[in-house]
Length: 357
Image (cartoon, rainbow, N blue to C red; front, side, top):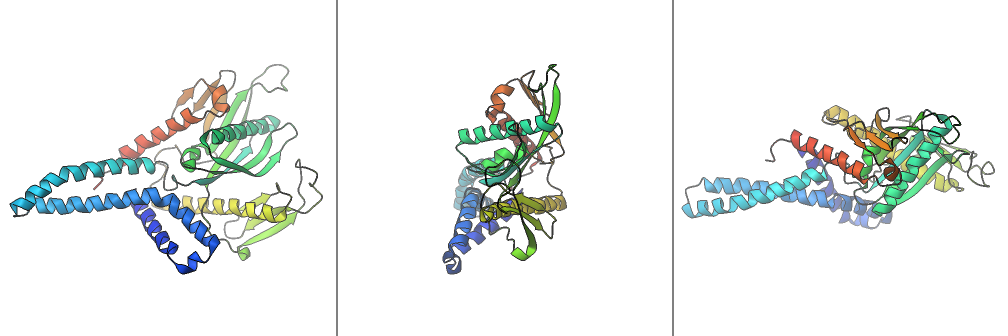
């Protein structure tokens, strides 16, 4: 954790320098990106900077308390309890702020929902998940934008890609990454049999432009006709965009907009998020200090949750959480589930942390 906090503070201080750089100030696009990232790090970095100052003050006071000057010893001994109390409070706050990893405080993320096994029923379930996250975002006051959607005739989605923006957004939504399973009787089922189908969710932190830069020569851009439901423009104009990143092999397609330019901009956002996520995972694996718990691992192949409609039951398998209020949760009241996951991460983090010194 200290390594991560040191890295965040160093980044914050670099951004402070960039904000004062005339070259950055004259570039409005870069200035906005730098200011946005600086703002997202401000609370954490400022608190950690204060923590480091307190550590030094405590070390100095201890040295004074062991000195030969009686007056200075008394002064240091009187000051130490107050310094230690403040440091302990800040340490607790830092622990809470870092729950969920180094990207916990990001205010933007991309969510990809894909229908899995189960045909039309899986696509309808993917649509249910989309509506659940949409309502949850509305209740939180977050902004949500549909970047791309591949809908089905029955009103579900084979795939839908969303962008979210708001305070604490990645900290809460990151726990949704993984496999979601639904058990229910489809409307088209005449004999009332329960079917099981699935969808996968991936939540990716959206990096700032200054963090991940992609040059046009680093990817191939293909333009093609849009297909599927989507309005009168479909199959009439070559507005759909497919990007293939050479280094990673990541492919992103966008066709939701009539404008090729808008589809390209959205595709680049998703591509940057996927590249950032890939590099982040590689770095975590190198350090081998992540995923002490399955919570928040983001493994899409891992089944994290079951939605059982006949029993009105939701079960999160990572923390053995069962709630018999599925109707409320699927309607957007995701708070009890998210808070339980955050609480679990909090206790895991605190039990794994050593001394604050």
